[in-house]
Image (tube, rainbow over all chains, first blue to last red; front, side, top):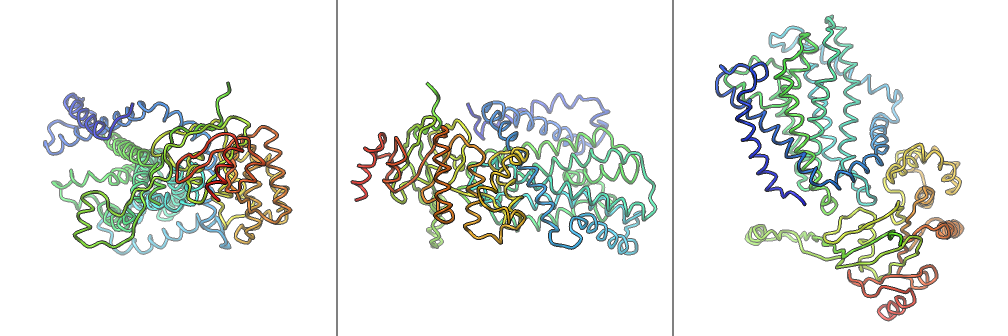
Length: 326
Length: 245
């Protein structure tokens, strides 16, 4: 038995409506004050209900295809070494033949960040304290996202030679790219710490929680990567379009400016940008030494899971047709 | 009875051939609405069924364009058939695409591990086979040389060595094992014969009736994507001789 796309969409919508009503009565500690403006409160609940519905529909779609799941588990087990090798290869290939070699992975972000610090310590500022650190912390997270999704988007197309010749689970390629970017993020983070010390910042104990926003962003990026890489096969213009979209996206995210310059009434719309929440979460931990509240966590998890579910579903349902379009 | 090594059931494969002919605007819109844009249907395989038992050497014959390669790719899991199903019991090593995913920038050593991983073998396993592979390919001198500096013969030898050293239970052999010189070809044949005697299932593809007759017990003949004849090798070969001649 299989679920058609139409039925799956219907189930999602129905579940959203079903979830919406009881969720209105969740305790205020989770969903925030009920006294909030309806325009802020209602979308919050809608978001919650939709995410929950999406996740359940996604799980349904895969549970029904039990054999498919078993096969996926088997093939992942068989090909996890390939994944490891691909990530390793990405890493080594990047700075091959340079004299300093792998050292560049660390040197490159450090130098870039130092240059930016020198420039931005004096220009711009927007009245933000410790502007370089503010700016770089946002950039760190956003760059991870943009680098991983851009690299992953072309991964199916660029591995055409392999896909045409042997059976390999196709999701290996976008996943490998996102993992490579995660490795790069680790190096960039070290570079960030250098700047952090360099500009005389205080270390916060909350910095130990940094893996949390990184995991959120990682899952979100993974979903986007699956989605984009599968779409790019059928619609190659996307490769060029996405660069422009990313530029716009970057400016929609508070990286170079503070959130406060966005008028209060536009904030709910502004909050639809998932990257804003990930960046904000990261900054709360690193710059302010605060642990984000439950709602912030729910929003981040919600966006990450929604992206992962949609991305995986689109990827899996189209993967047999990639080869016919390459 | 044992389950078959390969079982192909009612397999059909449809391709949409893309046409790059530039259409007028009116035609374009009409075709876009009818969803026929750029494509023309082509059935590469139609209702193909056969089974290969374990340990059997099975021949797959047909002229160019009969659908042999498409069928092999379906069996190897590269294509998903439009209709029908294929069941494979065992590890397939396709000798039709040697050295899938060889990266010219990397050394023979790295590529052996990578190629092994593409067939689903962990590095630990490849380590145990590593010496055997380089011995067979006679490439010890070039262990750490980037593949882009290899001759095509060397590349082919390496690909063949990796694909056969990993002890597959099903081997797909495409006709021209144009690997290296006659000396190495003899070595390849010997190795394949060895594997056959060890009970490996072989799917041999050829349009040369003599080769098929010599090695196979049963065969199938494809013509324009359909099964023309299936059964004993002599019978299939005689039908093949008729239609080819």
